[in-house]
Image (tube, rainbow, N blue to C red):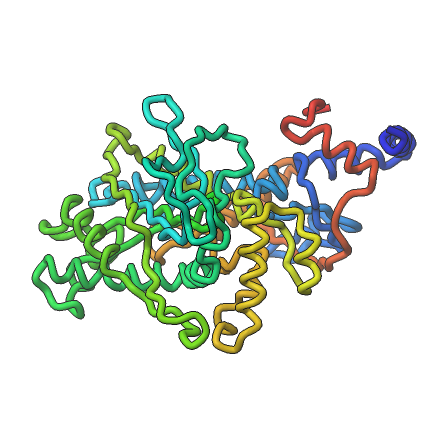
Length: 446
């Protein structure tokens, strides 16, 4: 309580200073960004035709941190989620750099799961009723004396969700190796899917690109058990990309059947065979392939898919109970504020990562992510627009607004300046002000 009163006193003292209005504007314009970056330098708005300096500004500048994770910065994550939504939706209905004709191209919404590495506690619902966790009709026990089933109906906040029934039976080595290889497994899936499409079309694999192009956008989602699932939009275009119509044989049905066949066939050999034995990596048997409806009518609509993928683009390993920062020393594992299952996964990453056979996987580097070091959202080159293009368009729009406010809208101008990193974060009084304008902060707009 004393600290809060001191912060309020500091804010009141700041309000008495002559530059309070400019300082307040600099903080409020970030809309509650939790960890802004400080830049120091100067810039000038210069007439691009005559070289005349039209406007100059300098000093310290606050900019958004740009973190995509909602658990770290809800404000920047909201922007990232909106950009991802626009990117995904543009590849389904057109817009930005994608033509409107893509709405008629075959496309499916795919969910790929991780395989099982041991029985875990789960919450399952059907018809609005919570089902038994792991039903078993006998008192069968594992070699360690633990019942192989669980007759409870877990609450949504039960801390046992995602925890193995028997941690000693759970294959932690296999889980973290699969996790570290999930990106390569997806890459192999895309290659095999192209081969399957060529086989079904009756054309050589090398000639497939002359008639059809496969485009996709995907996002990784952490499950409570600590493993990622992939949610993806897969679309078939003509040979020149989204602006070209696919051939007549390319249908939604053929695409869906090809995806199912390919998922069941994709395999990778795990590294480190002398240490842990022969392991074949694959996706889980539970897959979901649904056609995406045109014009917003049907079970799975373009807007629903875009919103679903965008939501998971702002989540990370914290959804599984992992930590934000990297684990740099083995002793750090002792102090991790995580549940036992997550701790065992992180510790397994650290153990295997120290063995020469597993060094290429980077398990120690990504131990805080439970082994997964891939990008959370990726897309093929011609799926639609890019996040960079969306950000540049927003920057240009804000620059145009600034020129208009200065009465320079009709002048051809460019910005010339230099800025350097000068720190990050808020002073106590700035943090108090930022919290008041953050959505849900209680004093929004104050």
